[in-house]
Length: 225
Ligand code: NI
Ligand code: MN
Image (cartoon, rainbow, N blue to C red; front, side, top):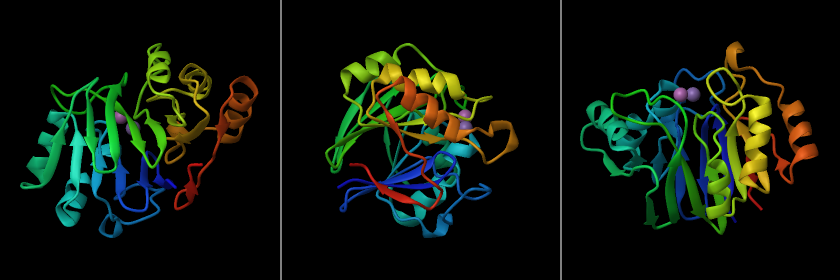
């Protein structure tokens, strides 16, 4: 059974009972943070790009826990500068890697990277019998259809806050193009500029796609059934 815990904004933890995979751990300074960076436990940390609201506390958490950071090499460089000696695994777009908990594929994202030479990405994570697509920060792009065709997506974690990423309408189309069974909205509400009507998003998505939308509160854990 794969469990999903939401820590607020774009930060979440996947736990298959044996392994813990954390993503985009922006906790210090995050008004929605449901846990302190000193308290997070994890084995791996996925980072979608180097903006502060994603890379966040990753270097400190990797140093304290011994977790391995998985990211684009330029983003790993930022982490190593902040916390020399941390464990890391560099990847790039289109590449896959098998890991003790399953498999990770690094996908396109349409967004700036936050570090010179870097590029923003998303991840398709196969873990605990589920396929989870974490879109990172991104605009809508047509190749989401390819992502959905290559990997049958069970759960898509999609930004819906608008301004910096997809907004409501584009995130509905993303759910449709990915042909995902479930959507968990992320990256909305910590600040007024990305406030979003998540109930409306759920309503429109469920009316116009096959996806069920799960609104998960910071601090809440759900089973990805
Ligand atoms: Ni960003
Ligand atoms: Mn962001």
